[in-house]
Image 1 (cartoon, rainbow over the protein chains, first blue to last red):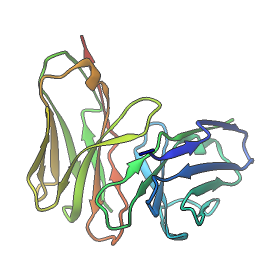
Image 2 (cartoon, rainbow over the protein chains, first blue to last red):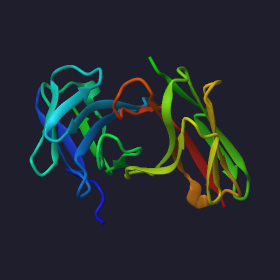
Image 3 (spheres, each protein chain N blue to C red):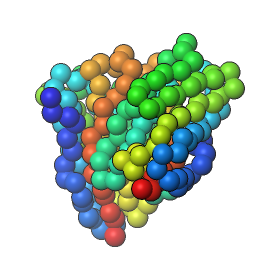
Image 4 (cartoon, chains in turn yellow, purple):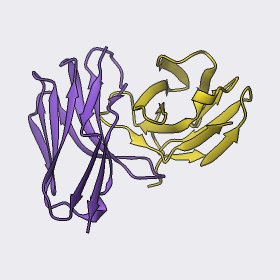
Length: 113
Length: 114
């Protein structure tokens, strides 16, 4: 069974640009979660999508947004990039919102210059 | 607001040693607690999950305990091996959010030398 996949592996942008990160959940999983892991900080919850809808978001500004497609894959968009957005962005999926654990992808390393 | 702290931040031990990683959380109202392993360039791998009603879970050389009332969990690794070198993350699922948001600690970076 294929795991959670994310693309690209690395992404380099400059301040003010937009970044788009993609995630494909495990087949059959309907919930997708996004987390940010900035240097020196723990993983911070960003967004949760389930059945195509945004169900909740963490304490991040509105320039962090995303969507979930009918095939349950997801996109995270970060607009007006700032230097402090440089981080590892992890996507996770679960079969439903009620399951105990989440399965994580390898992450996308975003560097903002 | 739930906060999770892990001590120590880094640990270096020779192969074969038994070791303990610590995790503390500020709000005892949790649904469950998980220990993850993170290897460089890779995602997180779930090691052990302890439900709020449980006291411990074991998997191979790993044993995790949970004392919800004191807000503490420990991960015990027996007979450590170089392959255990990784960052270990503790995460709690708050019991009052109604959804599966995980709150992570900042991790313990473990290096096991041959």
